[in-house]
Length: 325
Image (spheres, rainbow, N blue to C red):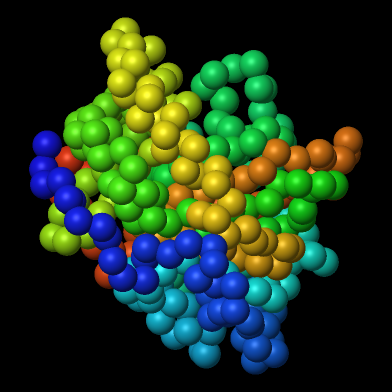
């Protein structure tokens, strides 16, 4: 176990919803120039016969939006830890075109990493999974997706369609969560710094990781209660009552409306520093026809300016390449 932060985390990452009541600087509205760059970039890729993911940054030129994206990625490490890009032209385009747009934007922001054992580079957040299977990834259902972090640096979520109702994306500051625990239940912190078993960390068996890591004066968080419980069940080492109490306190803080910020409409791209923020999605009522259901395209990105992680948080770069037979 590394260092434990015994003082509140300060700075822009330690935000609460009220901090943005009169502040819209977290929204980046694409200009007409930016939008006008995306359409010809898409046309160029299609004209050359290329498809996702078999094209590079040079094939999807964004003369002014590209540098703006690079600046936003730098801000994710020094600012509040998230940004919402608004106005991406997706509603009238086909699925293959949306893949190209999502991938092309990602090429200007970082290096994509794989999101599952199958090696997917774009995750399709849709209600197509089996809720009765504990191995089903929650984002593949219409169920409530609890606040969590993913094993990557930055998560990009491009909204293509919203659900009939619900399905709202929400963010919480990991630093503010930590500060609340420190102020009200500091006794839980020791167990939350100890490695616990998680599935979906890249290997066939659950890997070890703490919920919190404090390294070079920066707090990093990795949490999804469902996977922690599943990981310990798979190993045959149940979580202790004290650890479950700690999780219950975390969940209570996360569900407090004063802690989180809700967002996302079609054409919005949510960018999140996964080391500093936790994400959630409300349950949704979806349409019967699959082609009308909620759909979001997800990128996991590794960025050049990502913070250095402590030894206990090494290897947070998605899944390894699928094994070939």
